[in-house]
Image (cartoon, rainbow, N blue to C red):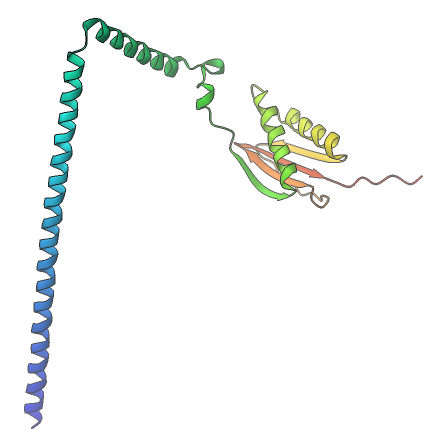
Length: 201
């Protein structure tokens, strides 16, 4: 009896494996058919697009050949002139010192590193720093620090401090809401405020 049960169990498992195998085969077959249909559709779409491009090209050439020679010559001259101007603009640049044109220059990349300052004050610091940097042919850290300090001292009262450079360490105590550490491109700027207390005499 034990052998018969084992044989029935093996036959049941064998039948289940056969059923699953057939299911997988049919699934694979359906996937192949779908894939082939998708490929056929893709080829039809590509052929139609190619045909349409060819017709548009033929149409534009046909239209171009039927223009009066004088008009065609004028259009060609205008196109040549535009190409020359584009090449010259790219080659020479119309920016300062033969650099890229103004509209192609990237705005300075401002990144806030740490801040305890209202957004309006941060924006003022960014604007002042950008304007001062733009007025310098090359970075003058001391001049930039002085400009920011004067701007903030005159606008928000004393005592603002500013450190500018490409590499420095710092450890400062600042007044509440009076700290900004940011960078513009590769220039790092630390702007902070300390409380000013009158000296007792």
